[in-house]
Amino acid sequence: MTQVFVSIGSNIERDFHIAQALDALTEHFGRLRLSSVYESEAVGFAGDNFYNLVAEFATDLDIARLSQTLKQIEDDNGRCRQGPRFSGRTLDIDILTYADSVGVVQGIELPRDEILKNAFVLQPLAELAPDALHPELKQAYAALWADYDKAKQLLWPVTYIWHDQPLPCL
Image (cartoon, rainbow, N blue to C red):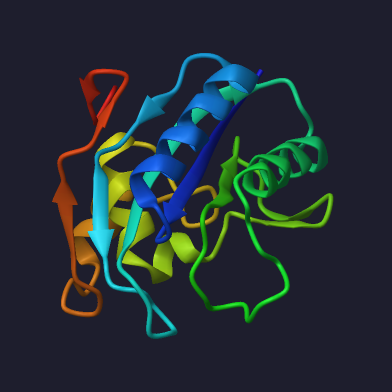
């Protein structure tokens, strides 16, 4: 089994689509470890605020099948792929890491560069796995978050209840 971290985001019917994503991920992969949910302004376009979080789970799927599964979950939740790259979305699920893989693996760039670029990815990842090491830099996510310019992107934790449980769910 391979340990995977994925980011999950939504800015259209956020509560509903985040819950749908978590239900689908649980159905496909079993037990999830989840960060808190963070709200942030849209990055790269004018739009409604996003909810974002990070999930960790184990899978026996190779990275190509994992990517297909995540895209299907997005599509099942009305993800529109025809619009501009930076636009509102019902659901966005991105593979951040796949074990310690580095480089292009089955068409997927790993680790995902958004880990180092976006607070809405790095902060929940650092919360969920503070001592885990970035596969390429070999630095702990907590240390990367400590060094991140927090004035670059504002985000804040929100209370999020999933199946009568507040997140995070570690």
